Length: 111
Image (cartoon, rainbow, N blue to C red; front, top):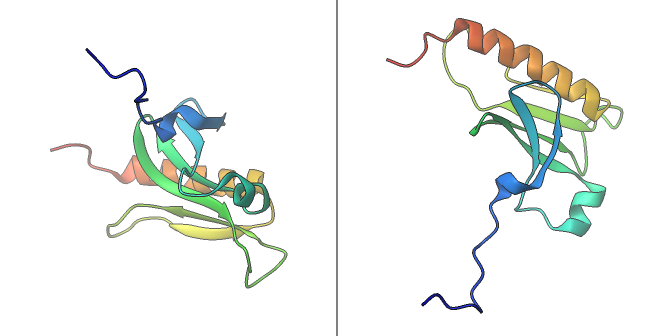
């Protein structure tokens, strides 16, 4: 008989915050406390269930006018820009998505 006092751990996939493309979703980083997330939001980016990148607001950005950092978790020759800085979350998402689309077009697919 299962122990009713033990709860199953919540998966970070359940904290989906925003979807800006049919296949991309922005999910809160579970490693960041709620109070810190209010000041410096941090997200994982998923394509379906595959984690493909991150977007977060830097605490001390090199260029204060560009506090949002984005990065693709991609390696390989001939890949597009895989990281950047932007003024807003919306712009960072757009730049990330543009780079991801290029990566997907260049990908040979599964073996």
